[in-house]
Image 1 (cartoon, rainbow, N blue to C red):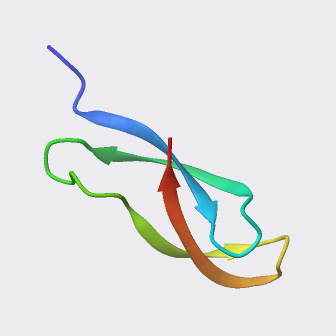
Image 2: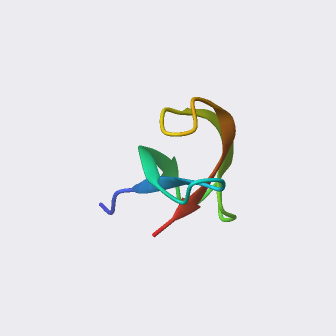
Length: 52
């Protein structure tokens, strides 16, 4: 049986650093993930987008 969850990396839109990694379900979430997370390099909450 194939795994439905995929490990993804989240990249900050401000400083372009890859700060977080998480998982997502490939079957239910086909579009890219976008979350507002804390960036320790910018020292504030910024939008983080999924990258490969």
